[in-house]
Each structure stands twice: as C-alpha cells, then as structure tokens.
Image 1: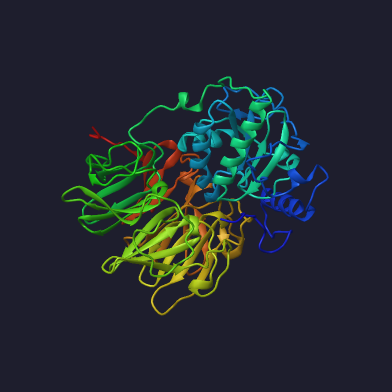
Image 2: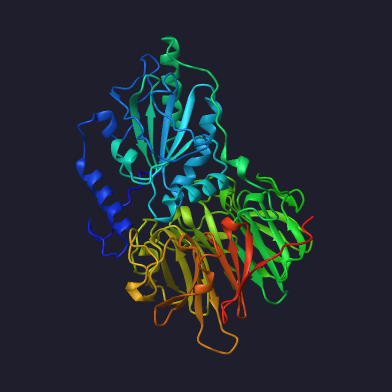
Length: 545
C-alpha cells in the first residue's frame, strides 16, 4: 500500500473534547507541513535508497539518540541506546497498536529478524494514537498478543517520533552500524526494498570490518505470560437456539465451543498457529476473530492473520477454506472476486439469506460473499480511510472490526474512527454515522449524537429486550474497557456502569435475550452480563481437555 497518513478530516483543529486527539492531530499536520527538514534529506525524505550492486550503502546524517526515562519492553527493563548498538544495523518501526497497517508489518519484521539475526536489531517505537495505547502495561499485552520478540520503547510523548520527523503510522527508519540514517519508508508494501537495503548495508560494513555479529538477547515479556484456558479471546458468538457459545480463542489459534455455562463440547483447531484445512484436530488457524452461524451445523470463521474465511462443518468437524489463500494482499479489484483471491485482514462476519458479510478491516471496506454462487464483491466502502457518509460504494470506513444485522441495516463498529455506522440493506444503499465524528475524535463521553465519544470500539451486537422494549445496540467500547448501550433511533449512548473497572479491552460481544456474552480479551476470559440488571460475572470454562 501507499503511505498511510492520519490527517484530520476537518483540518488541524479537531472539534473534540479529548485533548490527546487534538494534540496528536496537530503534531501530524505540523510534521507533514514541514516538508524537507534541516536535519537532512535522508531523515526527512520518504525512501530507502536503492541498493546498487556496485556501490556501498551507508547513511549521511546522524541518527538522533533515544531520550532517557522511557519505558522499554522485551529488554528486561533495560534502556537501550544507539551508541551501545554501534556495529549493528538498526531498523526503527514506528507504530501504534490499534493500526491495522502496523499489524500487517509485523510478519515482515519477523522475517527480517530471522534472516539477519546476527546483524540486525529491530526496535519498535510505539507512538500511541489513542490514550489507552500510551500505557506501558497495555503495550505489553499487545507485545504478547502478537508474539513480538524485538525491543519496544513506549514513545508516549512523541519524543522519538518528532526527532525522526515521522508523520505516519507505520514508518520504518534504517540506521547503519556507525549510527547514520540510511533512509525511511512509510506505509505498507516495502518489505523487498528494506530487505535489499539491509543486505547491502550489512555487506558494506562487513567489508569495512565495522559490523558486529555478536548475538544479542534480552529477557522477553513472554516470561510473564501464564497460559490459561483462553488466551486473548477476540470474539464470541452466542447461539440461542442451541444454547451454545463459539469463542475465538485467538492466541491459542482455535475456536472453543461451550454451552452457556462454559462446559466445552467441541474444540476446533489444533491449538498452534498455521494454515491448514482438515479435521478439527488437524486444522490450523492464525489469530482467528469473528465467527457466524449460517445454519445449526455450519460455522464461518474470520481467520484474520491468515487473511481467509474458513468454513466448519460442525457435524463432521471438518474445516475448509472458502475465501482467501493464506496470504495478505490489498485488493484493487472489488467486484466478482474469486474465493481464491488473497484477502485483507477479515475481522468479523455477519450472515443472512446466504449472504456472508465480511468486515475487511485492512481494506477499510465491507465485503459480501454469495455462498451459493461462491462470488465475493464489495458491499460498502470506497477503500479510502475516512469517516464519510454517502451511498454504500462511496462511503469511507476506518478499519471496520465488528458487525451486527437487523431487518433493515448492517451495523458496523468502525474502530479507528471510534464510530458506529449504519448501512442500509436492499434498495436503501445509504451509509449513516450514528455516533463518532472523526479519526482523532475519541474519549469516554455518553450522550446523544455528535456529543458522544468512544475509543476504538471493536464490537457491536443487536439487543431486543425480552420485555418487548425498543431494540438497541450493545457496544464493546474496547479502549475504554466498557460496555455501552446505543439507541440507534435517538443516537443516545449510555454506559453500563457495572462494567467499568471489570473489563480489559473487550474485543467482541454477542447477545441472547437479555444476556450479553463478552470476549474480555486482555483478561483472557468470557464475561456474562445481564443487560437489564447490569450484573456481570466471568464464565468458567470447563472440560476443555
């Protein structure tokens, strides 16, 4: 993909009560307006120089040193410095953990670390967009979820970001073994260029005997991770007819099926990450997220990190791939795509009348698959990341990550804009924003319409109260670690106060009657919430063996 630049949709001054969003938007706009910076063209520019076969590759300007008094992860708490890393090639990865484009970079970073294990040091520079993302303990959990093994520094005040003149997530900066900046790239799709440049820098300094191939290692955060029955569960689907739950046990790379009391009846997936069809014991997933039932014996799974849709025959317990091929790709053709076409981070699913709706988070679109015809097409979203209401194909989405259906609308948890969107079905092809006002407008504010502030909401479910009251939406307001109710007619949002301080980044929610089942992701459990009384209690998973 081309570079991803977070530009406020309404100009530099975002109309928002959340000061962090306003400050970040001003920082980004200032960086973009600055153009070429005094610190040097290689630092201010946007390209890694090409690695010519006949010429050495080295930097031209000094790389700014890391500030003191920052929190470090995957180093045993040790502060790293560029001075101490002399002799190593260093790759800085500027990221923020809710950004899907940053997540797409992770496999490429791991590949580079493995290939150049004795010469390259990757350092993640986490410069947080959302308030929640700036907390070291929250970053630590994300480091564990994505199994990062390189050092990560919490650049919560954007000190390193500003010193390197960064203006977008993700950005990678390459530094040579004598501490000079070789260049930088912005956005996705630069793996081959980085690979070639790193190889050439290594060759240059190895020839000059300035390359240090001493193995480096630090204590990893994973030493603090205790295995549990569930590990970072991302989504949950509640089946009222059969009285069962389908839990996306994401970091065990499997789907756990239980009754409503938590007694396990089925485990789908071998329990280790991979990409393989077959029986429930043989099949492999990678960080699966949303699931949906098409009928009592057919479950579909958004196999997010495999960029695929998997079908599970629950009667025979066989897993097959029905869309995607295990590889990631930004998709330019958006209509009539074959099931074997690579997909782009499918995050959640909804189903009605043989149509499978897909929240394609990495594509910033909603797709639909005709299950009988086996054809995929775009349902809504231009592909441009924006909070834009319009007709379905012209509307802009922002990393859609949760879906819910009623008779008239598809509801979308539009995560990066902290918004809830309403998409018309049938002849009604309008997209309307119920709450949320922009990419940098976020916080924790109840109220009506544009006064509401959410923070990276990942889950949405439809609730029809058992007493016949007006239907509402229930939201997993992920970075606020709360469950909230939204009246879609009045656009009124109310927090369920009993969930505050109990949940930790809930990623998904599903409702049966007046009971909501919550994927309490960072607490490694499912919670059961009575939407009428507010009573909440953890679901104990048993018989998992």
